[in-house]
Structures are given as structure tokens and as C-alpha cells.
Image (tube, rainbow, N blue to C red; front, side, top):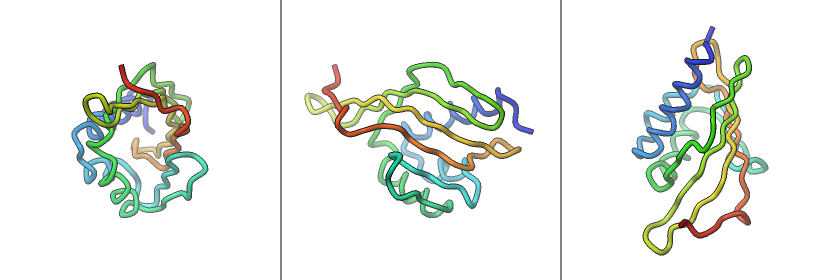
Length: 124
């Protein structure tokens, strides 16, 4: 069974891989039949290949920073992040809350990202 520390380690690794732009390694954090809904309300993606394609477009283009503690309850984790996109004067940021569920081996079974584009603001 995945411990809370195992799950927190995966979340921290996820953030590092996103910032490094490593979509293959991010997809490998997920189970083969995992789902991803980013943002919540969009069409969920299913399976590692679809998840890899999603991150190929986002990883490295979005800089993530945990903005609070990773809260773990059983096989689920919720955590706040600050996402920054763009460069120079065009940088914008957005607050996100991710909810992930994990299997017994601390692989991600599902990820749901709570954010809304109307909350995008200039970084600064």
C-alpha cells in the first residue's frame, strides 16, 4: 500500500518533471488505464498514450510551483499550485488545485485539475 510519504514524493516528482518538460516520464507516473481531466469540465482523457500527448503540449511550457502543502487522505492527494506561462512581460499566472488518486504502488490512477481561465492574471 502506498504511504502518504510515497504519494507526496510522486506529487513532488510530478512538479519537477512538468517543469523539466519530460512528458514521457510524467506519463509513466500514471497507471495504464488512468484518466486525466484538466481542467475539470473538459473531456477526460483515458490511457497513458493520451495522457502523454496532453503533457507533450503542456510540460515545460507551464512552470508549476506548489503553493501549499500536499494533503493526503488514503489513496488521494489534493494540493494547490501556482502555474506560470509565458515569458517577460507576457508572463501570466493562475492558481490551480489538483486532485489525484493513486493505486497501491503510488501510481496515479486519476488527476483532476481545478482552474478557470477567467482567473488568469499578470505574473509579478
